[in-house]
Image 1 (cartoon, rainbow, N blue to C red):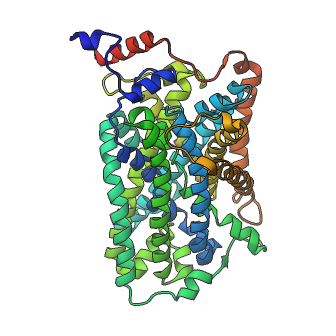
Image 2 (cartoon, helix red, strand yellow):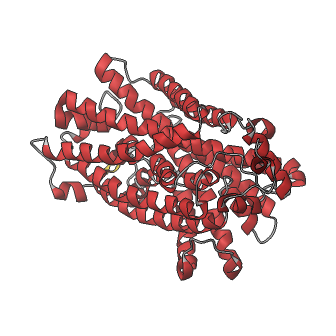
Image 3 (tube, rainbow, N blue to C red):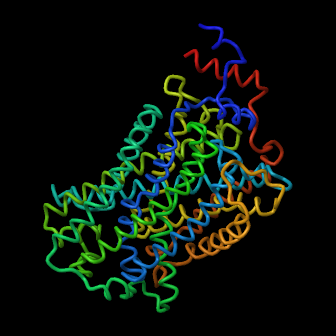
Length: 511
């Protein structure tokens, strides 16, 4: 082995130097380009997943008017949150992301801020993985029902859900280069897929809904009498779709020029999704042939019925396959981001059995155990669907609340720092404070909104169990903090001196 590899003073990239300054060794393989970093977040947002899997929810909760106008409104508010997050990401480009930022920005007791930010991020990451792969299972089951008569029952959907999670666990186990390649493909699959779906729905059907119908029709099938309340609930379709873009932050230890590429990945994934998603939703809504028939479709997936009604069985199935492909790409990327967050959080001892979850596969340089915890946790969160038909909407609410609370905690702390905040090369300048304030207010609002009942009357089957899931995780993290963790958890741990970090890296490079 050459002296250059053996020496602790081997040349380092600017990314590695910055990571050393933050206290970490370059354990993960830094092979992602800026485009690949953007691709991870864009793939997890996945307009062909979130928009389509919650489209039926939107049809009942506000209808066309809320579907079409809720999207750009929520998209702009999400962009505000993303801009605030991107500025902090530029200062601290590390896989820990949100909880690491909270620890460094807190004026006092950074360990407590870090602890609770990390646990909310963990909850949201697991829930968004569950939501994405659960949505894919719905669509796969709908296709199998149409093609082979494999009925869309809760048991069948849960079976497919489990198999999809296993597939995504295996793909992530094979290594970051494969995942990076698939993410790059995914970007074009999503963009071309939207163009194909919208193009087919515009040019093939002989009849379309009127513009006034698409942009003004309000539908309320929730049982609630207040149009305002129902309309606000309908924002969940858009807000759930706009989740997961923190993936660009979690992948910064594997990305070149991370202090710029990470923030750009966050912001551009939101912007591109905002435009393409609106085009998709408008296109689908214009193509509705039988509104009530789509809601009551035997496939259990209203967009599938809209496709079939507009294009016929064969054309509908082809569009369904395009959506399924996008959803599978999306779920794979979600497991990737989730596992990196678990890897980083356990690196600092914040999860039970942290040493086990932090282990790196020396051959693939991936956190294999964390990958399977991400997949397993998502499966557990989806199981209530076997007895609660509203479980999917609850899972999406959990994802929104868990992630957005974690998203905004570092922004709040950054605001409290004022001029003491050390900006990275990507920053908002004088717009930092107003953008941060709006972001915090918006997250407080949606965190309350999506824990409220979504259907009336409230029964065991229609109960929104989001508050229970949030309280269980918060209670577990809170009790563990008070009883034990506050005595030993000091926030993100550094891995050693520059010499010790170099030794860790040499050990990995020698495999």
